[in-house]
Image (cartoon, rainbow over all chains, first blue to last red; front, side):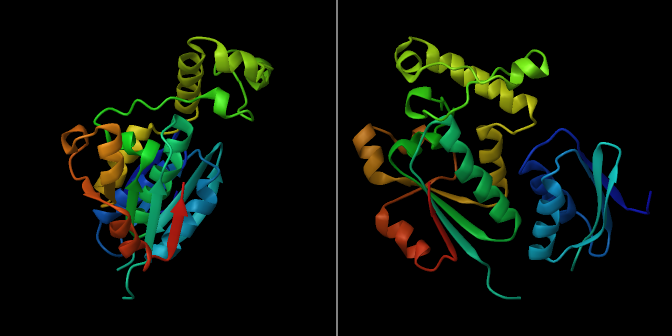
Length: 77
Length: 169
């Protein structure tokens, strides 16, 4: 497990909720902080990077842990 | 920073299955920093009501798979061959199909239409109710949730003419 400042568990949620919840959560964080997002939605593997790219956040890593997908999202400016 | 991208959607259908796409796309676009407006017209207008009563109608969706949201996997995977003649005419079939679909959505972690609409509002999506449809179907502004604006074709087109994405759903 990498270092992170906050965590969001979206397990069980389907499109588009992981993206929406991540957006609302990261909005409350400061620039440069890292959010760990856990999801069970395989679609999020493409959706979260697509979203992050559009809004200027960075996906530091993206890995499978068992039946879950874990993302580390660094908040942009 | 460059000017925000814009998305204009017309929501013209009011069944449960057709209620999803406008709210899913609008909330996600807003999350992607786009300015979004949805124009609710004709059968889409009741989606602005305080309580969303949208149902799914198998009779107008001949390709709709009829599957059960419970039981073992092979049972859930079975597509029940219910002829349109039956599903379209059997009293109460719509109610049953609607509750089965809602159950399936819930099992799969899909948010309800009401939850997605709340997300849209929280993310700043503007919802416009069609004045003409209100007159035709007898809706008052009080029938709708707070924050809805009322307008007509020109209101929508004024925004849509400068939008990067325009969708008719």
